[in-house]
Length: 206
Image (cartoon, rainbow, N blue to C red; front, side, top):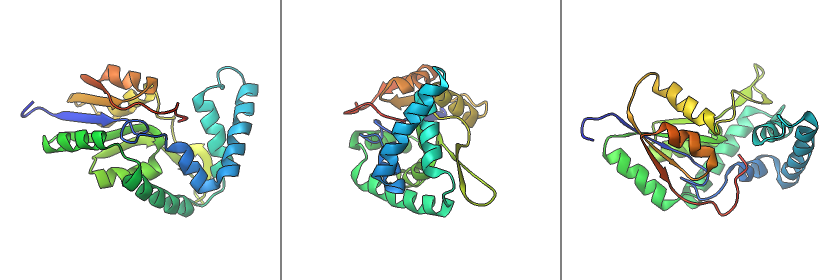
């Protein structure tokens, strides 16, 4: 592919990392008890709201609101940097990092496309020398406090492919897509070459 524009898009949880990182981050930020309570109450609220809301996206929105609304964004950033450092040193998949390194040596652009939270993925991506992070963002109010809402959709399923196309801004590179689960199927379908990399020990929550 000499001289051809190439992009390598990597899912994170289960692919670049062998585990789900969303819940461990919530536990570090809000505590284990509060996180467990938020998932329990979020599931109940989502069920009461009806079938359309009873989904990963709906439950995730409820959990994020419970754990993040009113919290200082500076506290979030501090926790995210510490969490990212732990992931870098203990929770990256060697095979996936080697693939990313190979793409870089070929002059390919690297991007993480993930339902995980961008706040901790950005420092990880910087350490891995990725070009961009397309992930779930948290909304910050004018007062510097988190609103508890997502700033945009959860980056899962069809949203992964849409966000990648948005980032490409009309460019048409050759796209490799690395993922591990059904949440990546639309990204795989969008790619020129789809690669299943890794298998989670348990079903992810993001």
